[in-house]
Image (tube, rainbow, N blue to C red):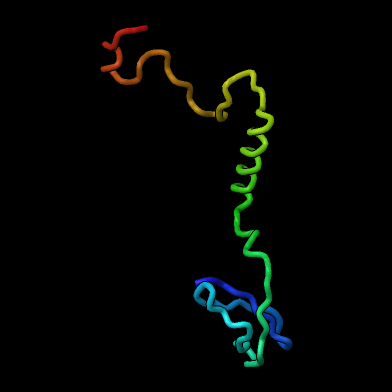
Length: 96
């Protein structure tokens, strides 16, 4: 099912769902039952959340001009890894 936009001369724009490719050029308004014409509009371009949009923009920018860093980025307040192995079985592994 796809969502199509129609415009009623009395009540304005409203959405209606029809199977893809089967939307009629005119339909009845749900409020006043007047004939409403189908309107061609942009397909939900604002449906992406702001954090996702920002992450996609950063990824696109870094493909052309990656940021140069002087240290490994990390979160503030996260505990650092200990120097020794975290699992006791790892202590018996050969060292390089």
